[in-house]
Each structure stands twice: as structure tokens, then as C-alpha cells.
Image (cartoon, rainbow, N blue to C red; front, side, top):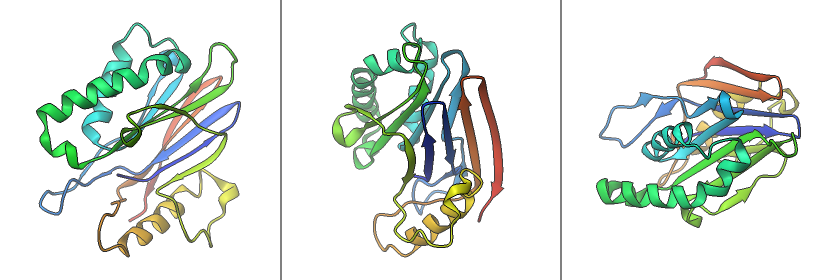
Amino acid sequence: MSSLLFYTDENEAIVATDTLLHYSVDTPPGLASKAISIPHIRMIIAGTGSALLFNRWIGLVNNQGFALNVDAVDAHAAQELQALWSELNRHVPALQDQTATIYHFGISDDSGKVHGFAYRSGSDFKSERLDYGLGVKPELMDKSGINWNSFPACAPDIMRAQSRQEDEKSGDRVYIGGTTEVIHLTKDGFSIYSLGGFD
């Protein structure tokens, strides 16, 4: 898992992620992008949980003829993700102990509005339409001391608070670290930038 923050309304999608990869206490951590822009279909793909599924899914979406816009991808996503997850679980048995969620944010060719979708392994990757507004994963219990109206500028503060919250857990926890990376999609295109480290 990781930190995923996103804001959507009809005209824009802003996605912020950390970059820390943490597989286990026996493996050294690494860094990776956890959200990717795909400009030719005006879409952002983000993921939490299994990095393997996320990376394979990006390649599939980028190379498929059905990938015309976020709605066209949604029409096929659940079935394709189920098949991919099943294949990966056959070849990598350790994945059976993991979960994965894939997020899509993009501009609909039909309505011209931003649409967001989530596909969760725990729900067999059933398409879930996301409401407009701010999403925070993992959910932050203590929201004090953060200027929420400044998003995405406050993303490092949110991630630091998430990390402190997760540090207090004794069992199943999320590791958050590295840098804060942001992808901002509007009808005019993409902005991609880093807000720096927050460790």
C-alpha cells in the first residue's frame, strides 16, 4: 500500500502519491512512480497495493485498441483486471497475501467531464464510480493542523500525518515515504511535478 490523495471535479483531476516501495522488513525499500499519465487518452492511472499489478496494467492499457478514453477503458477494465490478477497469482504465489486497487481518472469523450473509477481486488475489480471531491487513502483519522483548502500544496503534510498514523500500528500497516509526486489533468493537458521529500 501507499499514500494516494486525489481531488476531482468536472474540470480537473489532481493525483498525489508517495514514491516508497516497501515489500517486507526483509527487503530493502525502493522508489517508484505510483501514478502515471497516459496523454493520448487524457487519463491518469494510479495504484495502491501490488506494484506488479499496477505496472502490468499500465502496459496493457497503453497498448490496447479499446483505450480511447476513460469510459471506454472502464467498459473492459473489470474483466481484464480479473484475468490479469488471476494470471499473476498463478505465477507469483506471494500475491495471494496482497491486495490491489487500481484508480482511473480521465476526461470522458461523451460528456467532456472528468470521471474517476476504482477497481479493488477485494471486490473482484468491479467498477466503482468515484464521487467528486477529495479522496485520502489510507484514511486519516486526525485531520488537525493541515490546510486542506491548499491541496495539492498540503499533500506532503497529509502524507506525513498518514505516516505517523501508520507508525503507531502494530500489525498490518502502510509504509509511506520518498517524495510527493503530483499529476494534474485538465482539458488543456497535464502538469506533472514533485513537491519534494517529506521524510
